Length: 140
Length: 106
Image 1 (tube, each protein chain N blue to C red):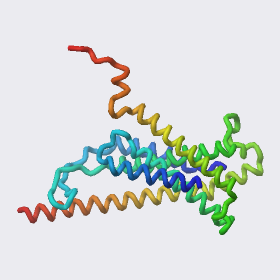
Image 2 (image 1 turned 180 degrees about the vertical axis):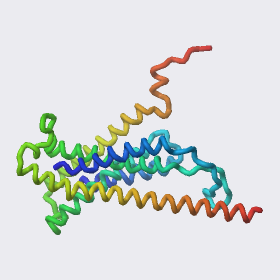
Image 3 (image 1 turned 90 degrees about the vertical axis):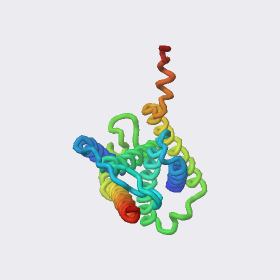
Image 4 (image 1 turned 60 degrees about the horizontal axis):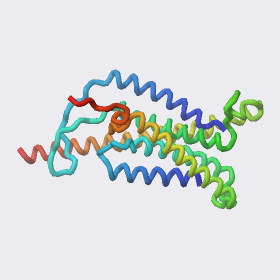
């Protein structure tokens, strides 16, 4: 009914957080990494704000496409109160129930998947750095 | 069917993005994240529906399936329009700027 609103609210919060973190982030240090396991190259780690943008895009994109689905099913209308369920108290209660169950689960799953992606990318970064150190020590 | 359509759209976009990486001229990353985000959200929707309907969830009526496919394709088209608007506004290749401004000969 309006489950996407939970993800959209999280998207607003994470977008604001991204802007704040972006301002606070200092210039990234240059480091040596190995992209192919054969030679080392100079590179920079991507900042956390960029990783947070992945979450923003998933939340905003998902919310936009789900909003389209709700328009398709006639649950969102272009006039007040915009959500058809909001005009009837019984439907409104059902809508809030759906938001607290389905909506919260949607936002939570997207966040958990993003955390997993961030975890995997951190592992890849560490492995590339370790590989570069190993190559540098074998060269010297 | 809507979930399946968006998952396929996400997979195809990710393959195209990976093939063209590290070039990001077409801003395909936006499209990938958008479809993956929507797919995860519809997955949750599907899980809740499965919990309610049980095995019946996997045998929808042909008319419902067709309607869901129609919705899925419309969603993909809507996603592509959002991406196209972002691409034209950000204009990473400078095509729009080149069309709007004429270079002055020195």
